[in-house]
Image 1: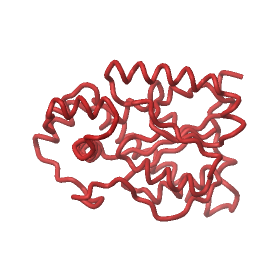
Image 2: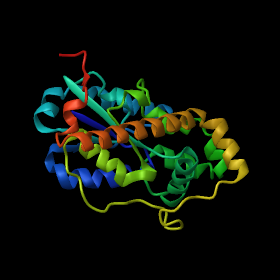
Image 3: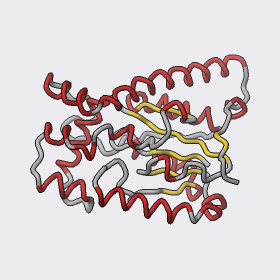
Image 4: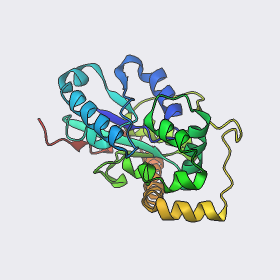
Length: 248
């Protein structure tokens, strides 16, 4: 089972569309956990939905090859005989601002993060200091580290990451897909002020380290693909060691 973790504002929606187009009904969307938001209501919702999903193990194995959505890795960790976790990450300074402006643009969303955010009329600094979202990208890894992922993608190198996914798992995801961008930036980069940079470094230090490591892993995995292509036409799937579950 491929378990595709959709880290917010890191190209997860764009990747989802490519997965849907290629895999169709063999892909399950798993949204609604309120993952990555450390407030009591969200934590309890994650717990109850995780228990419910784990009770469907046999059904999931029969119906799906890929599960993609906003969930922390521990929701499925150890559930399937073979499980490959994948995720896209984004520069933490850019991801933090992108998520802030996403919340600002969408007050109507039925999510506790939106209600708290708008009721408090949070400034950017208020948001960055809010402990519910500190190290948000790392939160999605749960008890895993980025080194445990079968494939690491980068938002900034989206199409190269899709190529890496295809080579790693033997799929042929194709098409143009870039969703949910800020209309004010049109997918460009945010200007990072000194104060914002210092706040991200203070409140998202783990995300900075996760992203640093993700870039290293992405480069290594991509280099292996290039080396393999130059020496063989066989699938990279034969080279990849899948994560073996401890549950039979």
